[in-house]
Structure formats: C-alpha cells, structure tokens
Image 1 (tube, rainbow, N blue to C red):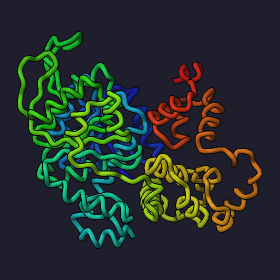
Image 2 (image 1 turned 30 degrees about the vertical axis):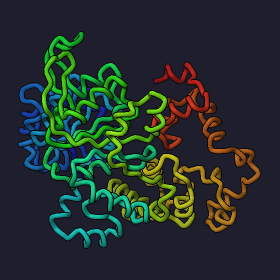
Image 3 (image 1 turned 90 degrees about the vertical axis):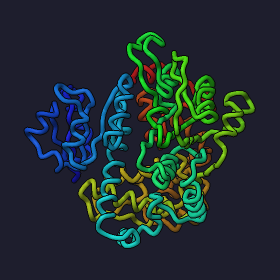
Image 4 (image 1 turned 180 degrees about the horizontal axis):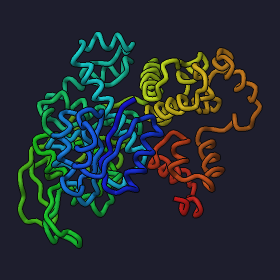
Amino acid sequence: MPHILIVEDETIIRSALRRLLERNQYQVSEAGSVQEAQERFDIPGFDLVVSDLRLPGAPGTELIKLAQGAPVLIMTSYASLRSAVDSMKMGAVDYIAKPFDHDEMLQAVARILRDREARNQAGGAPAAARAAEKGDKAASGEIGIIGSSPAMLELYSKIRKVAPTDSNVLVQGESGTGKELVARALHNLSKRAKAPLISVNCAAIPETLIESELFGHEKGAFTGASASRAGLVEAADGGTLFLDEIGELPLEAQARLLRVLQEGEIRRVGSVQSQKVDVRLIAATHRDLKTLSKTGQFREDLYYRLHVIALKLPPLRERGADVLEIARAFLARQSARMGRNDLHFGPDAEQAIHHYSWPGNVRELENAIERSVILCDGSTINAELLGIDIELEDLDEDVFMGMATQSAAVNATSQDPSEDLSLEDYFQHFVLEHQDHMTETELARKLGISRKCLWERRQRLGIPRRKSSAASE
C-alpha cells in the first residue's frame, strides 16, 4: 500500500484529503508544517509527499530537497500558480490548483505513483523483460502507452518521428482517449525532456483569467493585479507547452498565442514590451477545429499554425484487442492498490469489455474497473460488476448467448422496452430520471463521461438542467 505524506496547515483541507486518500487504499500520514514533518517523519521514506505551497515557517518547496528523490506534489491556488510552476523547476513532480475535485487529485496521485514505480523498475530490469513479466506486450518502452493494435503501432511510429523535432503538434481524439499521454511521450522523447512540460486545460480556467494565466500580467494591469506575474507560456520557456482542449480558447487569447508561434515572443497583459520565449507547442482537442475556423469560432491562421503535424488517437471501440489488454492492466493496478491478488475477469466480463462501445473511452474503462474491484466480494469479476449497459449496444444476439451467467440475465430482459432505445434516447432518459437527486458530477460519473461532455450533450439534445439539481451542487 503506497504511503503518502500530506503537509497542509489548514486542518479541514488536511483531514478531507486524508479521508479521500484512505478511502482509496492509500496509507496516509500528515503534518501541519515542514518543521513538523521533519520532526515526526523520515520524509524520504514516503512514496509521495503532497504539500501546500504556502505553509507557516518554510514553504512547501523545502520538502523537495528533504524528500531526497521522493516525488513531491505541490498544491496551490490560482493566485499563486506562477510560484507552483517555479516549484516544478526546483524539482516538484507536478502541481495541482485549488480548488480541485476528488477525481482530479486521485488521478494525479495515481499517475505520479505509477511513474515512480516504472522508474524504480527501470533500474532493475530491461524494458522488454519487464513487459514480458507483466504480460504487457505493447508497453512500447519509451512511449508509455498500452496497446498493440495497428492504429496504435502507427501512432507510436509517428510519435518517434515527430518527438525529436520542434514542430507544433495537434493531437486529435475523443474525450478520454489519452491525449495527454501522447503529449508526455512527445516531450519525454524530445531534446526538451529535461525542461518543464507545462500542461494547461483551456476549458478549466475561467475566460476572464485565461490571458493573464497564459501570458502573465504587469502590476496594475487589472483589478487585483497587485504584482507582476509570469505566465504559463513563459514558465515553459525552453520546454514544452501542452494546451488541452484548445478549441475552448477565447479568440483574444488565440491572437496572442499566434504571436508566440509566429514571432517566438510574448507580451504580458498590461505591458508594452515583448520578450522572447522558446516553447514547443502541443495542442489537443476533441473538436473539429477546421469546421470551427470556417464558422469564425477559431482563428483560421492559428489552425494552420497548429496543424503542422496532426496525430489522431483512435477511440477505444476501434482498437480491437487493446481494450482487454488495457482492462487487465487497470485490473492489476487497482488490485495492487486494494491489496487484492486473487481477482480476475470472468468470461462474461471479458465479452462485455470487448463488445461494449466505451463512449467515455479509456477514462470510462478505468472507472468501470475501479468500481468492479471495490464491489467484488469473490475472486471473479462478472459483467454486472462492471456497471456497463451492454444490453443497449447494437450487438449480435449470438454474442449474448455466448456469455456466461450475466448474458442469460441480459437476454431474459429482451422484451424490456428500453432495449429499443438508441444511446441518445437512453442518455436523455437517464438524465431526466436522475437529475433531481444527483449532482452533475454524479450523473457524469454514472454515464462514464466528463462533466464537460455531459454539458455538451445536454446542449445538443436540448435537456435543461433542473434548478434543484443546480442548487444541490
């Protein structure tokens, strides 16, 4: 069980974070300051240190050298985001902005621990041998993405060719397909690997803050700008800037970004002077930027600047046997976290995993596996524990007849009217039925999609949010 140290002076936040991590099978210790952590614990002995940036006495960045190689995740607010980026240059493994939701924190912790384990194993065995031990035929060494389908092998080949260059890259793919993994692979295989990789989700930063966050601002540039601050583009100088969901970037910010790509320089908000930056840009989107550019929602000149090299990530439903390979990897990871070494998929679960269309892609699959591991009482995970509505898919009835116990239950309900529903009908029915007593986050999690995707589908299908649902959040 990984052992995590939380260093946070606010008792409420520290206790809430401890409960969250312990519920997810992590061993947790806590301290209210760097000094207390030093006095009570052997800091290098932890698998991960999660620390607030601003602490009484010494700042959280002091833990980076005290940890002696153990990863340190810095927590910060948007107001001090620049300092968090500076902490990465000092050796922090990553930062997370407050306020964060539970899923965001758990994903960051899981990723950091996974990377630490991979580095530890890299020191003890050749990559090929480790892949064979894990049964991971396509752990592609330096790529770090699971899958050996023809589409993925072609993608790996392109990544290896593109990574050493400084060309801008546009990563396209549906939500949940792993676009950030591609960005990390491009960065890690580039000559910029030792410099920062700054990741920014353009959809997560309020529109009023996006320009100052990306490009920085001068003192007095706007109300509340009490000091000059560098932007995230400036923080990525010498390294890589990854802009996720770039289709959400406002037009004004697009114009500033175009200047970075054309001239290699930025101008902070409120400044009259420009400064040079050396940044390699990787952008990602699930939207059709070409169509958006034709309708005036995205700058056409910026689109062509980004579209120097386009990498397409296939959805999970088009990756064939990869889905089972990824599912087994997730099962191994979740089993290790939960201290279970006896779990395996039943025949019906493997059939369901293989034939379900996974509209939420890899993210939905990971959530389904985590749910099944938590709920499984025996050693066999069946299709029911996965919580996927396989009966709503357009599958051949013979597939269901080939399943084990669960498939019989599915066929027994074949006269249910819901079987005639399309997936969009089912989505609409589910949301209308549950939105009075579930939050948007709970609805999205049950459907295996992001909150943003839930909002977009509401807009497309014309499903309004109930006032009671909005108020409950």
